[in-house]
Length: 389
Image 1 (cartoon, rainbow, N blue to C red):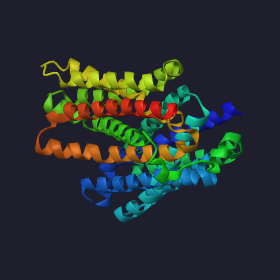
Image 2 (tube, helix red, strand yellow; image 1 turned 180 degrees about the vertical axis):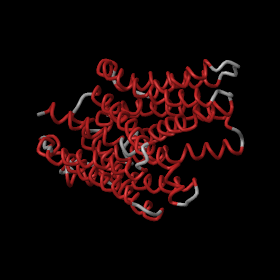
Image 3 (cartoon, rainbow, N blue to C red; image 1 turned 30 degrees about the horizontal axis):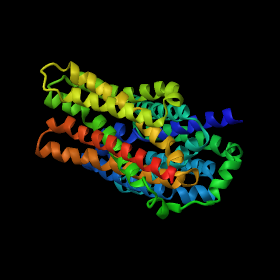
Image 4 (cartoon, one colour; image 1 turned 90 degrees about the vertical axis):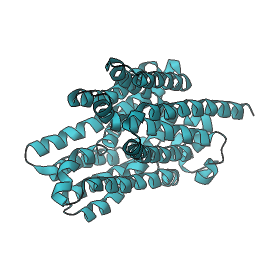
């Protein structure tokens, strides 16, 4: 039964990634058909992000009331319904309205699933599951691209992905009895839990919030602005810049797959240190003032590989750092910080690039990786001292 459940959770992580890259791949066609400015994608993205932040913070309450399995199934259903709604939308106002359940479903399932895996499965599964998220995020643009190039339109692209999500929803609802573990029942009853407000007061929580914010700011800014930096500042061809920007994400996916084989022996703290140091080394390679692009391109891939273990390892270490009874509240807070960093910091860099220059790209990334490293070490000290008390 346990092997069947983990297989279903792997499918759920694919479903997590499926909607994430659809809007960006479809928007060049969508905005023209809807007769709105190109920049309006930011409005839709912001609404989705606000929904994810809110539902992430509510995940502890929802999981204790409904259970991780039910929250996952209901949330995937909400994203499936939202994707179908996008496929039928004929106005920008309709997209904004449908973006609300889109974000609410995404945030709740992310927090609930990550906490369930952190509590019940080994660190290797956390690495591999986040690798499968990358599979979902990589597959959906191909589906959308096929629909666009085949003349089916962006509506059919959203409809196709919604069908996949509906099938996954059915599987999740059928699998609900598998999620009812004795340990989970204790957690869902909220026994000895501090709740969301109390979680903010636990020693070390501000450090993990800052670490998560910085990590997601680093990853999202690095991926979104890599191509522009390479092309506009270093003069790399558009094709090469686009290829190495995608290799940054490939480095993350490949790195998470590889980390699954060593995570149990290395441990979460060591993996985070290795990841931060590797990412910092990669960013320093990008920063080198050399005429050749070889070091910058290699540094981008190295930064992706360095990013790979950080996110899964921080999440997986949460029950050990703060107690199993508090992990859902704290992972919900972590998810909210993640979405905030992902939403705001790449946009802020865009403002800096417009006013000061895109040459700041590696320096901007270096700031986040250094703060990430400092916060993770402060977190280690805080949680180590609290365990001794």
